[in-house]
Length: 330
Ligand code: COA
Image (cartoon, rainbow, N blue to C red; front, side):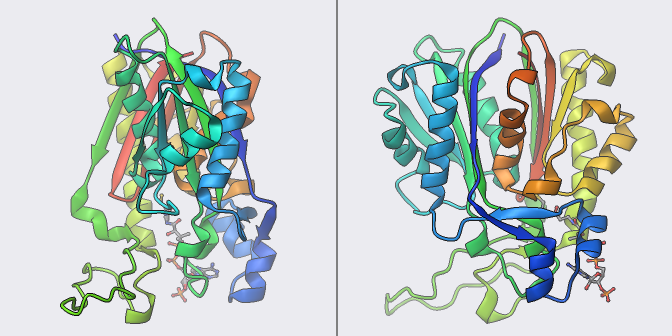
């Protein structure tokens, strides 16, 4: 039986606040439109700090909070869709920064579902005697990939990092993971190969589906309406599937932590699932969508409010299109 216990959390947000009012100085938008459609008031932008640095700070805070020595970490998993390097994996840099000298390390990219997939992976490693403590860090620096002339998408996203140290637990954990690659072009960011200099290379074909100008192909492309519809359905399905696996009902859960993309998406899913809103943690107003970092940021903000024996449901969705939910007892 799989089980995980969170023994430490940490987070790091860059200093620069990009408020809705700031967006109204660069785009034809305003606080009323953004807040009423998304629930977001502000998000952080990392002006100069790379993702690995933000992620390492969050990871160090989580390890310190856990009370274990960095040498006791057996695996570092980094969830990110905005690494600073193709390679090495960001987890290797975090491993070095944290001093997790005995740990293996690899990255997981399932965009905003990254922390869910990483926690699920961690729980499977923890079934092995060789793995006792796993550091999961989720960090994103999305600002370089967003098009700040696109008022529909750029207003949604923020930068930041958060981490959790997890260990074995005899209390069971359940997960449901899904991917719908048919919809990959609803949300994507293409690798920029425009500076390649192999004389044989020609421009490769672009994904169909989103109207794109050649000049902007390296920015995030999003079909907001398609993602919105998917997100509400995916959250409902993932929660129902994981609860069915666990033999639980929605009332058996003490705390729900959804991916923080948009408060309207969360409210619709909460309504459809008939969840008590007071059990659902929402912080999208101050951070926006930090992709994989959203859920661990909630965990870090909750801190000591996450008590032993609490039954927690995490649910997320993102590019892929991916989705998933985890139920565990702390
Ligand atoms: N400010 C003012 N007007 C804006 C605007 C902004 N920031 N963004 C879009 N608009 C305008 C549009 O141009 C459009 O104008 P028009 O009717 O004159 O053409 C109008 O508002 C409605 O646009 P629409 O795209 O239909 O808005 P929406 O209600 O679908 O909201 C999103 C747009 C992006 C907020 C919403 O679709 C959404 O949240 N989707 C999910 C995205 C997401 O979560 N992605 C990450 C997943 S991990």
